[in-house]
Length: 252
Ligand code: DX5
Ligand code: ZN
Image (tube, rainbow, N blue to C red; front, side, top):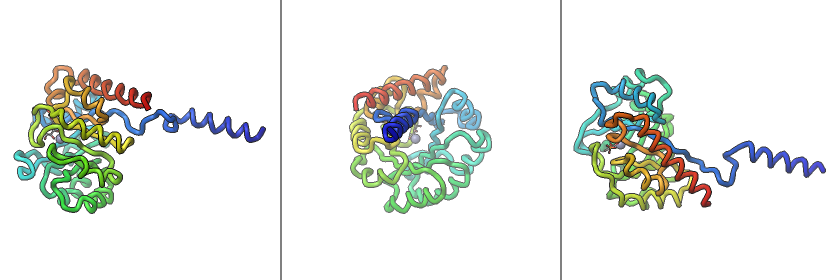
């Protein structure tokens, strides 16, 4: 009788906690506008506007004119943005820079939450991952279109997020590369609970491919910023990803 009582108690606890469900997923749909294509003279108010329109996080593109043929901003700007938007918004720093080791501490001090570096930019990813964690930030690892997903795989268990680039990094407004989707599917199959981000040319026309492949963190620049109704675009992107996650959990 006592054993039966314990069993009932355990089952009810399992039901009360959705993360214990056999069908639940460890990851959720998150939409992170890239403010690269906004009016850069109004970056603070553009970030605030995106959060008010329902963004889950902000994707901030740092370019050094060396790793990519374009220059944006660095940690002093991030520090100012943090003051403008407050403590809550999550800053995912997309570090398109040649020496990612150099900016870990300054970015952490400026208020970055996640440091997403490119695998192509470092000879010692393991050490960089360690340094990012020690500085209190989450770790993102990005690969350019020409880098295989097998090169990222050895690090996947040490990172918080994998970023599969769906354009050549450097500029907003480029065409989505659908042929990157097998990388996303492969990663989702191998690492079922990893956050997987896509970046480049993602919007209402291309989101379903990303969602079906298994991406759950969606960067969208021109499609969101350039829209008359960014709130609706963000909601549409999130719905597409949430539905794909739900479908995958039912299929398991
Ligand atoms: C490109 C950047 C992207 C870019 C995305 O190098 O990493 O984040 O701003 O912009 P769209 O969505 O316009 O391709
Ligand atoms: Zn980016």
